[in-house]
Length: 285
Image 1 (tube, rainbow, N blue to C red):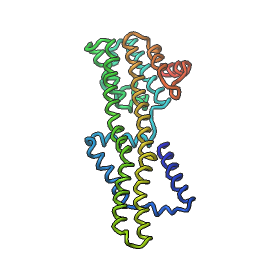
Image 2 (image 1 turned 45 degrees about the vertical axis):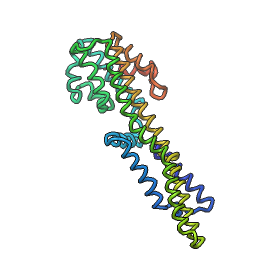
Image 3 (image 1 turned 90 degrees about the horizontal axis):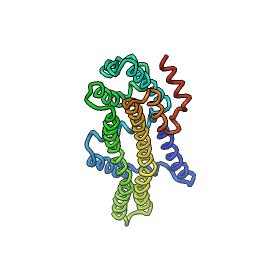
Image 4 (image 1 turned 120 degrees about the vertical axis):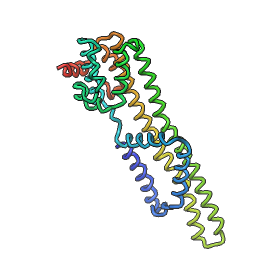
């Protein structure tokens, strides 16, 4: 939502200032300039990356429009689900977790916490860490390393669309210059014509430069920054999960494992120690 609000503010400010100065917005609708700039930018993006990266880019842009789901309530759901899992494993042995890890969609624990169970990456990260531990394929002190390796791969994958969009944003002023140069070529071809016609061609050429700079610094650049923030919030969520699981696996009590995970959170999503204790007591009931 903030992405939409910010973009509207940019557009209203630019057009509003232009109109106050006596300009007419219709003059900026130079469709040939739009085609040159946006078409060249789209073509360069197609050249730059494989189809999967473009699909991921669309998904991340949609995610920015919706806003990050990794808020305080999401962390509360995760802490409660992990606490129930940890307490079950401590009371009845790690083997008791097998039904929940084998069929997360029907787990009596996970289905209570919708925000956590709907995050397929988080569920896959959790089950991928604990099932080998239960099977005896890995040692408890290796869990953190395994989960961190998987998170690093996710982080690299997340940055690929950002890199493509960032390069496109950086190139937009250059594409604006290309459109402007083409406009000047047209202007020079009609240099002997009426003054009004020449002025129209010069204005159209300048609109190309204007559009390239505006799209770069007013829209694509801020969108790239929003995608980075969203990605950092997602990776931070998974790293918190990793800290809790690895702490529990290496012998920490369930409450202590979640307290260790809580302490690494940023302030806007970090529950206090009292809030954590209260939410875990509620989960235990």
